Length: 282
Ligand SMILES: [Zn+2]
Ligand SMILES: [Zn+2]
Image 1 (cartoon, helix red, strand yellow):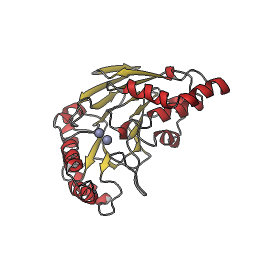
Image 2: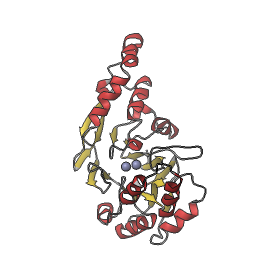
Image 3: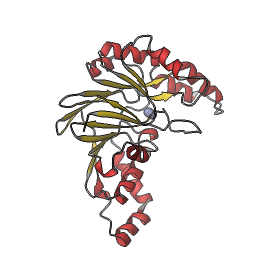
Image 4: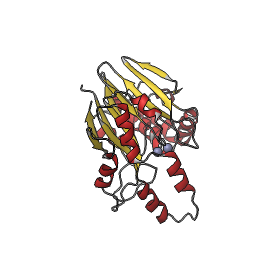
């Protein structure tokens, strides 16, 4: 099995509309392990679309507790359970993820108990081993490092770096521009970085009818301009760059060319503009 990183969903934020991409999830295959990073809406379908059985996931990492990164975690487990999952998958994430897991089971209690009784399914609760994320985790030959990123008002929010026997991948998570990301990503075979187009954010917020400025303020102070993403990739000396968690998404006024132009201000290496389902060899 070749080392690859698949972008399952590439849009930033929780809302979807006709024509939009899906919220964030990634599937990393490294040293024979299959690692799911984030579990946004649609993740379960997206894993299958990569040709990967739901029962083949070895590890799950959740970068932070914004819903666009874990809304479908419970749905993934429930669906994998009915597809035959009968072993424990470690789930590493911020403190508080255990509340979600307990709450999901409470919400689905009737169905879970019914299927155990009526269909002979295995125990559900033990399918996930929820662990609080640490600075360094060894998973077979893969080392995962986490770095707190800048995504106010959340403080338990992380960039991740995976180093295997032959390859390394860095994922920015949701973050404002942070020059330290270049050190964290240094020499990676692939950097997947979140990105926004500032003009697109202004257009998006102008269409909102909330009547106040809070969404705009949140987006601008907690995400990274596409031009700065190119700067980070250059400073880090990564081999390839991909964008995900893009804002805006599905606005016909902001085309692939706008993203290309922004990134290319500082980055002239291999570049992937993320699309749902895109699989990048390492
Ligand atoms: Zn997000
Ligand atoms: Zn977020």
